[in-house]
Amino acid sequence: MVGIGEAKARAIVQYREENGPFSSVDDLLEVKGIGVKTLEKNRDRLSIE
Image 1 (cartoon, rainbow, N blue to C red):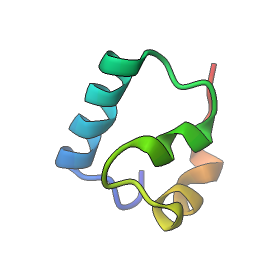
Image 2: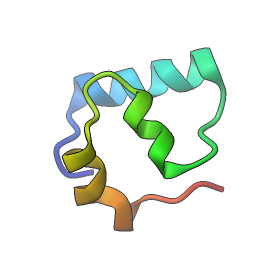
Image 3: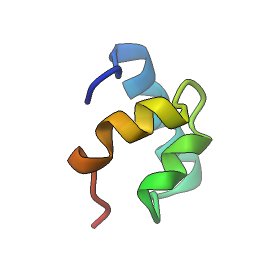
């Protein structure tokens, strides 16, 4: 993902472990360090299954 380094990747995994699976791509905005700009840069690369 564009703009996602090791620290943000760890934050995503930690959030998922504490809160369960994401129900939508927009749930990533709840992760500390992930903002609207980062999400929009990556939206076409993301999916929820």
